[in-house]
Amino acid sequence: MKAKEKESLKNKNAAELQDLLAKAKEKKFNLLFKHSTTPLSNPLEIRVVRREIALLNTLIHQKGQSK
Image 1 (spheres, rainbow, N blue to C red):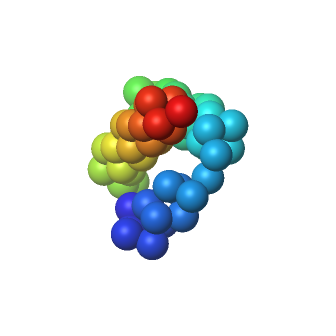
Image 2: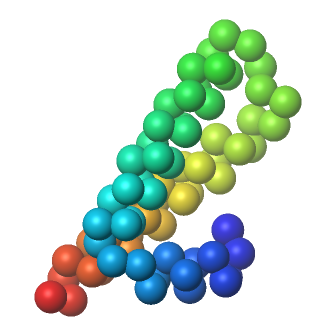
C-alpha cells in the first residue's frame, strides 16, 4: 500500500474503516478459498490483503483510543 493510500485511510472515520475492513476480510476469504482449490497466479496477493487488514485494525483501534 502506498503512502498516499495510507494517508487517505487515516482521514476516514471509524464507520468507513469498518466497511473497508469487512470488504478486505471477504477478499482474503475468497483468495484463500480459490488458492485451496487451484493455485493463484499471484499468491503474494494474500499477504498484501492480510497486511491491509492489519493496518485497518490498527487505525480503528487508534481512532477508538483518541476519543
